[in-house]
Image 1 (cartoon, rainbow, N blue to C red):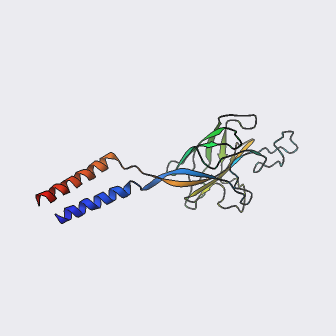
Image 2 (cartoon, one colour; image 1 turned 180 degrees about the vertical axis):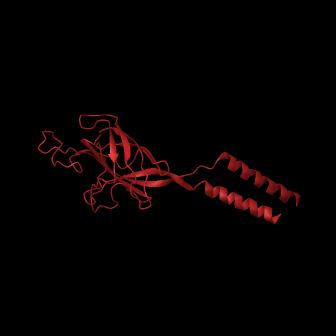
Length: 211
């Protein structure tokens, strides 16, 4: 009978702990902004490469850098990353009252070193599109190096931070720098598990009364 009671207690502990266990899904808690090695500003920039262009946003003829088009507020409206499926989806608020942006990405898989292991894509949909902020698809490719010396490196994931840099190739106009802090999402315990555990606890109580 003591064994039954101990078993019931162990099951109850396991159930309570499993309610806060972590799986492959992460919540996006913070959008980070900084100036680390030229990379770290979370936001959109002009990525045009046309030297001498009459475009007012093209000042340095470099797809990797450019004039800021819109920053991103630190607190996301919502966002999740699934490191099994490679899906990265979020709603963010643009700074200076420029509206919101929806980012829906696929292919964000990272190797054991935390480096983006394949080409990833992110659909960008602005709530208030303009001539310079228009709906597009951003491509992220680890073979295209943005900013050497920055840490975490662009297009990497270390379990807590995802750092991304990409542009709407092949003829880039919009670039996206994005650094995200993640927290593991709790895994819900299936109802069947709770029912099974409750049944065992009930049997343990019945055994105690009979004793």
